[in-house]
Amino acid sequence: MASSFNSSTPDEELVILAREDSSGVAMQELLQRVSGFIHLKAYQFGQTEQDKQDFYQEGLLGFLSAVHSFKPGSGASFSTFACTCALNRMKNLLKQRSKADSLMQKLPLEGASSDLGQAFQAAFEAENIITAISSKLSIYEKRVLFLYLQGDSYAEIAQKTDKSVKSTDNAMQRIRRKLKSAIDD
Image (tube, rainbow, N blue to C red):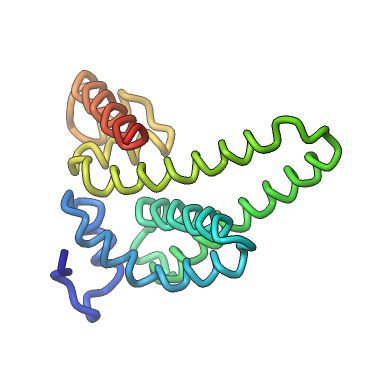
């Protein structure tokens, strides 16, 4: 899909549009602007091709989190904020792997290959979830999911979105169904 934005459209404007745009065009434009950095860092962290993909997926999750938590006018540019979020996710994965490697050295090797398979499956599912959030969720559903992930209760979400608690519950059911479908695909 061709982007309807040009390089002069400010990141901060795109962030606002990405939160409201159900087509995902603004989100894709933002991702395009930082994907080079995410790829570079993923390739620096990863040893194997699969490792590089895992780190890239973590970077994408950091980017998605940045889109939803960035506060325009806070003094930092979105690109800097998004790259920092992506890098932090990759560093956390590296720390988790280091801890896991240390633990694996202390444990018998039985079951190690299944743990690795589960990690690969989780990375694949994360990519499908990001795609589903961007392409399958409505603007309202994205807002509900964002508020829910911030820890808001259904009542708080209903109040912030000016909808009923039942509407919020229905939206969460649709979100779960859509994200489950993305994982199962």
